[in-house]
Amino acid sequence: MKKQSIKVTLCFATALGYHSVAHAQLALNPTHIAVGIQQRHFTQNSLNPYFNNNYTHDESEHMMGMYAGFNINVQERFLIEAEGDFVTKVSKGVGMWKLGAGFIPFSSGSVSIPITAGVINYDSSTDKEDSIYGKSESAAYIKTGISAIVAPRWMMDLTVQYEALDSSKTSIAIENTFDAGFYLFDIPIFGDLHPTVGLSWADRNSREINIRVGAKYTFN
Image (cartoon, rainbow, N blue to C red; front, side):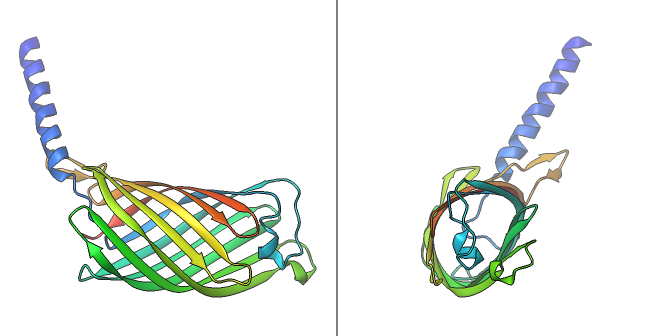
């Protein structure tokens, strides 16, 4: 009885492993919806430009928030992207949205170089009654980078984005996308839902560091 139980367990594990490997597929620049949470670290006075240069802080500040966005890949050559996020801390908050389009001048089986451009908007607010602290600003942005499959279940996007605001902003971001899908008795588990972890550094008035944890639902 014991030997039979072990045999069944081994057969189950073998079948599960086979389906897991067979399902491991990540696509470059996929059409997808993304959502997650984020924490942003603002170093000394880095919040100042978002609040009409009227908000100074001698110490670093941390804010928490969420993000969501989508990317549409047209014929493996053209891209449409949109994203929105916010971070807040009791008495203040900063929100962002952007909309852009672009193309992919180079793409191989494992590496691609996308280029997108569009408009980005920041909106800030505080609980202070004085309106000089609130601010909404829009500008053009351009983004490029490298998207690469670095392992069968791991894709990495390295991007550089420039925003032509009154006080310009340049950011570098790394996003890791993982394939955690497998089949359980021919039922797909996390099939097109991929966990993501991202880290970005931005320089405007001072350094900003953003950490994101979320997921992408892809339409391959």
